[in-house]
Length: 442
Image (cartoon, rainbow, N blue to C red; front, top):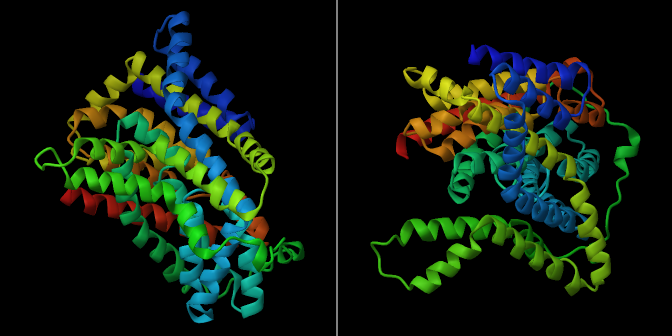
């Protein structure tokens, strides 16, 4: 019975979001009440579970996502994203243009939300394709593969960060493993896949060929742009590697080790990165603090709904735990011969196909498979990445990213399915294969 209630709950979530176009946060809370009632929870207990789930989820994430939005806005407004893209493209040359946009998409994708990176980089890609005479899909799709992978696999993006928190996964290890898996996924879904697409001619609307392009003297240098954009990754990974190498078995200055672990904490790493960006991309280039703070303030408004959606998923997770559904699912799957990693991926994939949103799919799947993390020996970091891979699968007409790609590239639905949907599916399958290979060694 509990499993049927979960299935009906997910179907209700799908109907509310896809059919009735109800806001995802409102839909999550409605489904929480539905599941709680049918599981026999007291009305007051349902409310308390929702409050606890939201509080536990947002307590950590509001800092990470808030600082992440600020950093992304500073990187975008300063011209650092444009500098990285244009410099890489000119450095790699026309012959290797795909690898240039892949690297640019990865670097810019780390601090920026997917939709922000898409809107900023796509006009630049259009300009490059027009000037080089190369097919637009050939140039653009590899960059979008990069952006998509960072969105689905890597903290500080919403879903990977939230799921890491749910599973008590080490964010540094998640980031490190995620990058290892991301590289082949991007290469296969980007440069290699686009070489098989010969008959699709994208003709974007003319207004997209005229983006606001900053002049050279208006942009920061390449070195400072890359350093500032990737500083959170540098700090988190350095701290994680340091902690792996210098265990308690080794003698090391404990105070220095404590400092390094402190700056590698995701919250502190993001805070330091924002402070550095304020100087390197703002104050050092003559911008006023008031202008920078206005930019920072406006960035936070962009994540309000993302935070609400994540908090709604956190509430559903808590309802599943407090009502006993999680324990029931855990016990039911305990004797399963299927790897928990594959189960998590499959569940995320099904929800992704039904609901559309990768973030909603990832967080909902995480709440369902949470018992598998504590009841099995599987790495929580790999579970995060397995769910992330599943959440990117089979993007179609109920996904906003599908329509952004279709409209910007001015394709038919059939052409979008044969390009965008296939690319996302390759990323999801390659990601799962990478997770299973890593699981052999971890």
